[in-house]
Image (cartoon, rainbow, N blue to C red):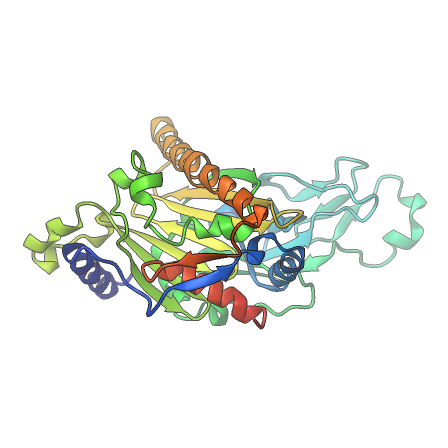
Length: 378
């Protein structure tokens, strides 16, 4: 991130901490409980995500030509490759024969063979070999390829569209955040794998947990609150996206240090909300990615949690330490945030109250929900 911007954000964070306050919205905001429990709204949400650009991983998951990775996006299996020309491509991970998945996980290969009948494809998606070829004269005649999806690489991340006819323009979609995200470099750091949470909470309720630090002092009293301030946030919106800065507990120590000696990244966590369903948590040592999707009904969601590290993971002890940090962060989200809001989801479904209240001190929540409502024409 540009140092002038970092210094400005740090100044704002120091002032908020000194004044014992946070960035505030003009007024409170209410959201209907139906937003989290209505089958009609669930259908609208699924349609919204299906037509929106999807950030699906780090560029470092395809580190060089001849590599591939697989993702599940909105319940759909996708194969991403980096072929000899260095470009990223995406395909439905569905064999042209009997619809088996062609690959799982990540790896390096010149060709990928379906595990069912060994139909084989190159990394450009072309059908390269068919055992018993004479049995499929119509299929193997001419050029046969996997169904390709629009794909792009931007700001160090892998993107795709689930709409085969879409045109992806991710720099335009991200606006000024494109260069800012790229400057972190986290998409080029070493990936640490994926952890999946299938949770009995609405997907928006899952995302809500990342949109404010007002809850740190209670929900994360012995975890995140020992590191970061509660109810103290620097907020900026970028169209449908936003950035939150969570100051760490020692931020006021900078008051006695000349600005030219500040090292801002040691004093903050930066959270990006990328429309419609992505959360990025960035620090000097970790680049966490949360891909959050609606489940099979309004009361379920799927969270795919990834992390990347700037450290050299070829050292066994360093890799073990990075994995332990990832495990800790994941457990905190699972056992503190999601465990608490599971009961909140149940209360919503009980119908006791017909709305939720977001305070002036919760700008991230207000911005998220107004952006979703605007996209749905509400």
